[in-house]
Image 1 (spheres, rainbow, N blue to C red):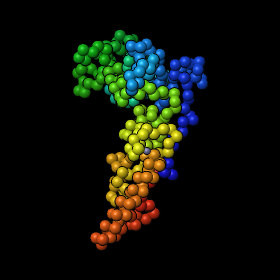
Image 2 (cartoon, rainbow, N blue to C red):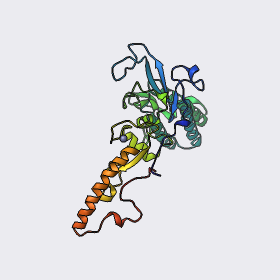
Image 3 (cartoon, helix red, strand yellow):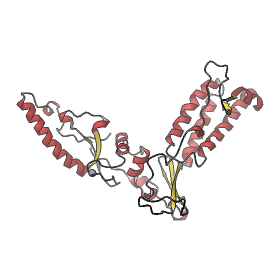
Image 4 (cartoon, rainbow, N blue to C red):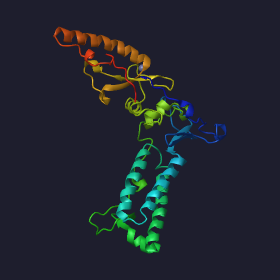
Length: 305
Ligand SMILES: [Zn+2]
């Protein structure tokens, strides 16, 4: 199957300002572990649309409650698993989880709404319990497992004398902002169920095949053939920019996502190019290239994985 169509029906649609207007009483919109909500804002703080008109709201993107809870639970599991391990082993296991989670939310407003600080506080409480359990009391625990590094007090780290001192990463040390990224189109409503737009902005949707998601993001949600943004109801196809029949490679640099109708137009043009190419090879006394690949059509309709 060469077609790929996003299925928006699993998306919960809500009104982003008013909980009472949404399907399930919650304001905002959850997507890929992000909660997207628009808040009413006064004239001076409000976002503006592309024509400079005041929109009367700001869009704030945060981790969902569920995603935040799952993360701190994972931290809890790791700390529990290492209840008898050396501190270094615990830090080595925690750091990639902290780094991974915060980088996933680096395009959100997790930092400015205090969510990263909250995760650090919750992590500290769990580590405190871990240390107390091992030392019998928390002041010994603090002395043994926390230290001062540079200007930072209370760093959970192995002692300075250690050959390889290791410190725990903080969630809040990571930069994080939805406005650092491709500016949210403020006139874009997150509750319109436009999974294509939000996929292009945030990366993979669980229902988006990985290659399609990557291409969507690379193309910023636009079809390079007609220059228009994809919409949910559009059928998209993966195209080889230089057809494989004339030597185009199967890598991201040579792939693009096109509307099906745009792909049809391009394929017709490609076929002409392929014919010219084959004729040229025949003139030079070479075998036609495309006929050597058995079972492959000479044009390059591709199945998104
Ligand atoms: Zn198109």
